[in-house]
Amino acid sequence: MLKSYKSLPTTLVADYIVRPAESFFKKEASSSVLLLLASLIAVAWANSSFAPAYHHLLHTDLTLALGELRITKSLVHWINDGLMTFFIFVVGLEIKREILVGELSSPKSALLPVVAALGGMLLPGAIYFVLNRGTATANGWGIPMATDIAFALGAIAVFGRKLPVGLRVFLSAFAIADDLGAVIIIAFFYTKEIVWSYLIICIFFVLGLVVANLLWIRWTLLYALLGLGIWIAVLGSGIHPTVAGFVVAMFIPARGKYDTDRFVKKVGKVLDEFHCEEQSCGYSILLNQGHLSAVHALELACHEVETPLQRMEHSLHPWIAFGLLPVFAFVNAGLSLKGINVASVLAQPLTIGIALGLLVGKPVGVTLFSFLAVKTNIAVLPAGVRWSHIIGAGMLGGIGFTMSLFVSNLSFVSPDLLNYSKLGILLGSILSAAAGLLFFAYDCSLQSKREAASST
Image 1 (cartoon, rainbow, N blue to C red):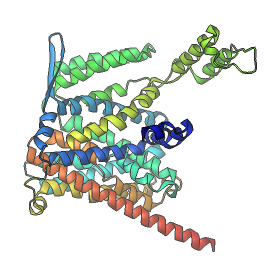
Image 2: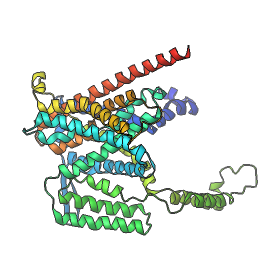
Image 3: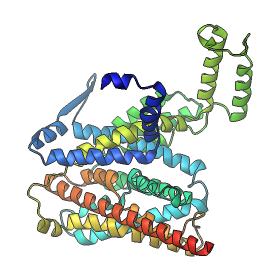
Image 4: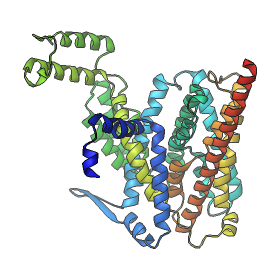
């Protein structure tokens, strides 16, 4: 087998193994496959005879020490409080970019996804609160408010060009606005007690970010060190430490050291240094020190013109989508089904509140608020997008998963309540995904019939 594999031409290996793999990891929606796989493994392990090993792994203590400063947390807490900060950081970078130059940069374009996100948060939260009012689970009203952008975009990717580009843009902007709302909710409503001394220290670190921006400092390491200081200070303040990721993202520079015009001129001068005696330069970099210096100059020019915001977002995004989020899903989606029966689930306002919030509250809230925004002329539908597309997007918005699991861990400590909330999240997300896919399949089929009828 090995011999036959080695005998394959290099081009064949590239065409059938390397390039498909590269294509998979370049697609943002592909991360939903890994998320789903990690979740299934977690559920299977949590319900197997090896379940104690799974829980022992999650609660293994890890210590970070620097001199007298020591932070000891379990593995699951390091992932949820530490690594998830990078996820919130990338979300913050996306939000800042969208506000500056993207779909959220102009009022008319921004208002529709923002208003849709508001409706998609208020109605699910209200449904949950009505069903859990006056109970020990009332604090979980933020769980059904979130949308998992990876799963949502993965779902519409199934239909390819049958759905307009404007729908993907709307869904992306809507999910980003939704994430912003989730960060605000975590900061203001899931903070039990504030230690003001740490918060004052945090403010000094933030002022350091402001000064670095004013001085046009583009050194990534400085922002990383200041960001670490902010994370430690926010952790000590009592506010959830992931909020630090969003704060730091807002101060990452969105302009390079020089503009594109200067970059083009500089690159032109550097390219003029490439002179070869023959028609082809070949591998002159290995032989010609001048060519090597020119390549280094080109590399530096590319680095200087690229904005730190775009560079960080581009470099971190694959690690977040294909590494951090599947790991997060693995440690948080381990729902134990032992001792749970259908009757007890249907009698749990916690589970039903989350599932109904995602399945019913999301599409109704998104569609209703979008309709009101368009009819009052404060927003417009994107080009090529119909109302049926908004309804379908609202259904897919009910796939809460990542952020819903995150808020669930902030809401409850009891293992039983966490299990019931995870069940509600999985149930609501699966039903929302199925409803959205079926709805879009029917809508695309109906549209194809209309086009065929109009062409005859």
